[in-house]
Length: 364
Image (cartoon, rainbow, N blue to C red; front, side, top):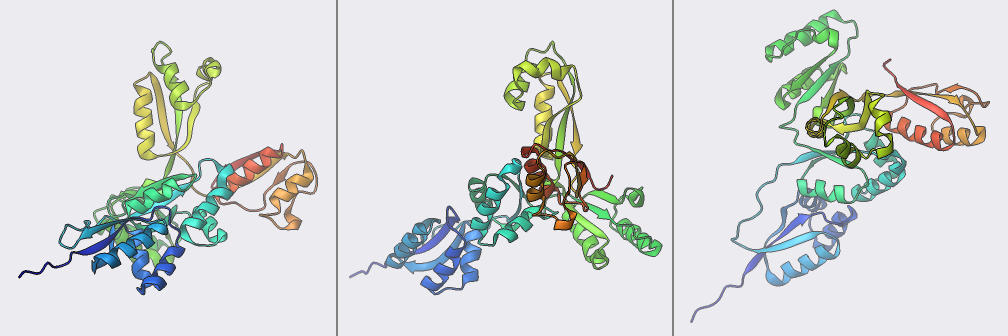
């Protein structure tokens, strides 16, 4: 007489789906497993959460996980398990700055943090809001947030190092000499105060050597933003109007005026890969464009005309001390530079209060 061995299963988290971070704690307590193990399985999915368990327990676990909003699958023991996924870093760019409060709330819900923490992550100068997560988690985030989700593979990306010259000639010389040992072109490095297109390993070596002095800043080039400027237009090309209308979203009636007043900005802020894709497409339609880097630092805010003083003071009171607020309906200059995201949001609010205001890069 032969006996049949009951099939045993692996429970696999395919994606975070619509689940919230609190699910890690709930599952940890319900299933008596470490919360760190649950969190890792969720945010690096696809990943195996339970190995080699009986069918009844596997189905119960699957039902519970699904009810929590996770995407789950069961695979019989012995079948191929999900391959180890490359982990990525994720940044968020708020294209429509009027949606900033909503985006903060959405990020708070997704990450299980406070609103202030969510805003701080969005303001982060290196743009990264989540690190070492799977593509499945990044895709889930993109479906649950009203902003552009940027994904990068740190090990494969290129980096820029910005160097702050404090006047220490010995330190400057050490920096240049160290770059030379790494086979980095050092021509004009100290004048430009930056070196570009470094691979991950080289960047990490420089960071480990000089981070203690706080003289360097590391920028992942995948997170840099660029504007697209229309320089020339071949008005005899049969496709140029179609592209401006359908791809750029330009109203047909203003196209002649735009063509007469080149150069004109077509896109305010896109990642480099998208900028190249767009400009190649535009060039094929007779539109010659240039790609320019968008300033990533802080901005100075100034108001040329205040229409409603009380409303303007109310807007600015969230960011400045009472004694720093404008006292009359005239010109006003912010007493300190502002993070670029906050500066854009304040400008949006001021313009809706009928103020005439502008932003200028703080490095000018």
